[in-house]
Length: 367
Image (cartoon, rainbow, N blue to C red; front, top):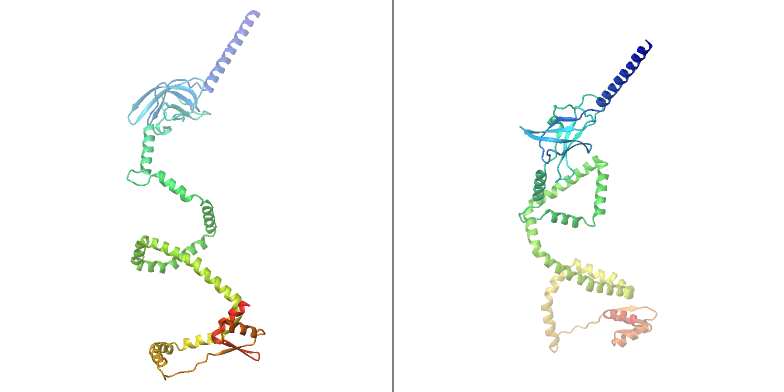
């Protein structure tokens, strides 16, 4: 009896262990994802570069291979098999991928299983969840179209020349461009004032624009003639530069020397009698013009009288100026040495002819 009970107990233990192992095996295979086998499929819009035998991957790791590729209407059906031991969600996505433009592509399954329904054989991944990159021919065609658009064959500048020109134009102007951006940023920090200023500029430029439109024919004529005038203007500027550097510079230096050496003698005379004479001449310009017109006739009469014996004679004595400087006597001697009779010294009262004032200045400079 005891022997039978012992046999029954051992049998129960064996059955329990077997059941436990079966349950564990089922749990491990089911929970771990017994998604292996064939019969899986995906509907793709195109399968360029995808062939039977190409790998099926998940996160770049090979998990199966492509079995067949068949066109079906507006899409291509790709059937593939998967290795056992991995589960995939029912809403997994399928993407064709390639490591380069020239290499064969692989079928990538996107999505990791966590819970819920699993991908089952016989149910294809729909086109709404399949994606394929552009084909090599489309990429090459698009690149060719882009290059043709940027480099036309109609004798226009190519894209490379345009880029080179832009590079040369912007060379050295980085700081100015930065300042422009900063000023624009500062302007946009107060948009109301910025817009108001733009409105004021447009309003103020309206009369100028209107006048420019009225005289556009003249402006266009000036612009048309500008290329022919430019060389002459260049020569004129060069000549003016020579005059300014040479003649004007020498004249200014001479005037400065006269002012420094003889200004104390010249300006009192010029500020008095000379200034009064200029004002008087300006007020009687018409009378002086009539007098000048009569000079030829008067000069002819005077010439006739002076060359004929017994003719009309007028005695004339130029005005004199009294010089009260301490060394006036010495200056008088110098003047008489230069021109006899141009200066008289009577008891310390020096009288100089007004016509010899410049000689007096020279005499002072020669001392």
